[in-house]
Image 1 (cartoon, rainbow, N blue to C red):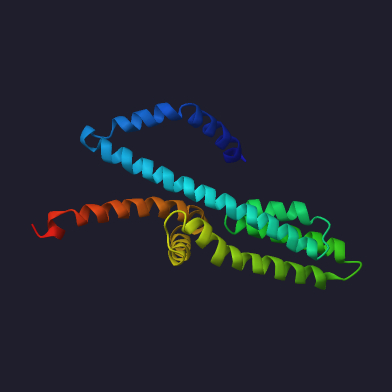
Image 2 (image 1 turned 90 degrees about the vertical axis):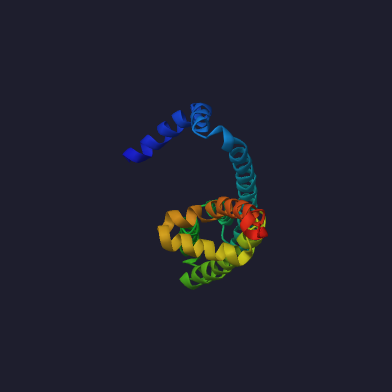
Length: 201
């Protein structure tokens, strides 16, 4: 509870003084490296912007999918639960899990008298099972991975590797961290190709 109250206050002051913090950090960069540093941060910022746009598109598509899927089963609360699930996908596993629990509870309460719990269980299994497969193997690799220059297979491996190393936080930061790492690898590779070692001079 204390952390939940402290985070908005700290975030407010951080955002208020953000420009000053950035200026202080830039002063630590040597003048000789300033051009390369500015170029790297600009490219990383562009890649992260592409990631955010791709993630928002995934959230929108999933919000529509979950709303329609639950509505086809006749759930009265299909729209709010579907939209919540789609938007909460931004937080891996937690958002999906909360949406699944809400849909299951709403289905059990609504269908208990008429069709029994079997319909609610079938609805959740089909809609959320298929939704998870679509999101993990189609939408995120295609709409997020390709926008930031990661191969769909690399996206899956990045999520698995960061999740294994850092748990939930790792899954949350896997793609943006991989995007920045990709920018650094591209630059290192370009520097190597232009080096004397590669050219044999």
